[in-house]
Length: 361
Image (cartoon, rainbow, N blue to C red; front, side, top):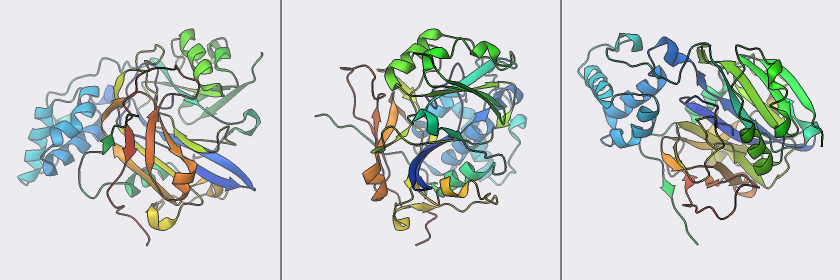
């Protein structure tokens, strides 16, 4: 459930999966970054979400529909967005977010409360690695910038019809991380997490994840009061299912097991890539940080993807590895590999028709 959070809604999440060949072995690299806690300081409307909505309001006649989901999630009043857009278009200077009157505190952002990300890692247990991204805080921002659309427009969303566990404890950036071979073992060890970061436990969630994914699970714990963008998370592993690239977006914001039939709001930038994908089919990423040698084999130079601001059926986004290698960006919203059967699906897909602005060819 990367992007399936305990009890908090994040904005401008950047997440994707990249296929890398490292020392002769296929690795899938799960990349993830979100904004944490800015609503505590800035009265609940996350400044980055507000800024994106303002840009849409300045240039896109359908901005209300495009931004409806992110505005609802972050308690942003459309009138505030429209007022700021008109102010900028009239030539007046932009205001700091805190200077905009009438902003409201988001009730779910409670300063000092423990929280976590729950991330399935569909890889072999002995192959899991948490990559050290501490020297390159901007790499996923660079990926997101490479995927920007030529102009604001809606995402194309189509419908088609027809035993004991090993436990690892890590600390990285704002996170205290627990990785378990079997998710059901997690509730018994989360008591060892710093109380300021420890989330409230619902054992049913972990039992469900173990049944639905049958793979190692990472729980990345943090405190809501830690403001700003966390360092990028990057988990590399030899995949259990090398024929597919999975972007984990199964959603549950209420601390309960995910509802497989729910419609959920997405506010993500999603990307995939492979070391075999032709550069002419992709966006080229220009990194502003100096990339350390240990990260270079795992880091994508070319990616395919798109920002998403839509309401879609719950699930992860599944891409065919063969398609990605061929330069085809076509992801299907799908439930986990061992998820409930017989749930009606709408066949939502994530695609892109726009050319990439940043392309080296």
